[in-house]
Length: 269
Image 1 (spheres, rainbow, N blue to C red):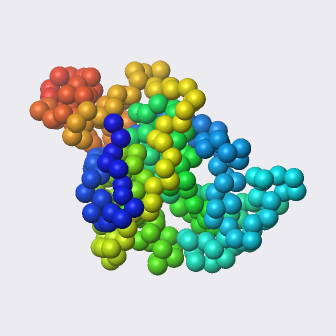
Image 2: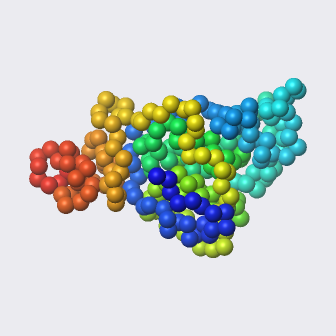
Image 3: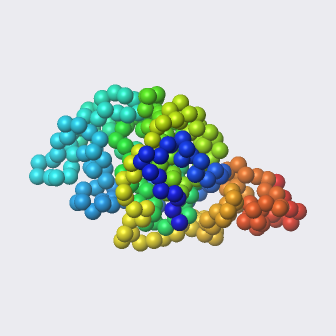
């Protein structure tokens, strides 16, 4: 089941309350390939997603002769820095397409439990994509709102609102620190609306589903089942998520009873 639908007129600050708060799951098994090819023609308009976003976000767009798709030049008013960036095909890295909710971040907050068709949808959803300054995007990495915000301060409200909208649409969870950072930013602009949804479905038709399993040959990852409980294959994974020690009498212990090797009611002590 997907998360609640995000109305364009809804307050981004209020929408934070609909997000589930949990600890960060392990990054084990993450790769860009888990989200399909870069870039997929998810809307089947004949152009790949990268060129669609360049055409949407750049001005003075020029396309390759004879092509309705390939953008070879244009000017980006970069939302992350507030500066204008000239895009040319021979220096394509000057402008990059950012996943506003980074794919690695999504992997640690729910998407590792999805089938591939939903991950491809997230990776290509226009709601989650912006053309931005390349070096600034590199500095962001896979940061969430608690660890990275655009240096262009006037854009931070719109940026965080877009992250909220994506996480609501795809039912991705947030950490407590991330939720608090979102609230701090949006409290300064309480009337900031969520951006309009792209209308893209949360699963791409025709993509073969494949639920991810442990790359180390262990059991498949088990989706969280209520509360903050999450299955961890090893104590190292649990420690990386910051949830140890895991004590008896909690949902987390019930899902990870196999980690209590000596049966004393405390796993990964």
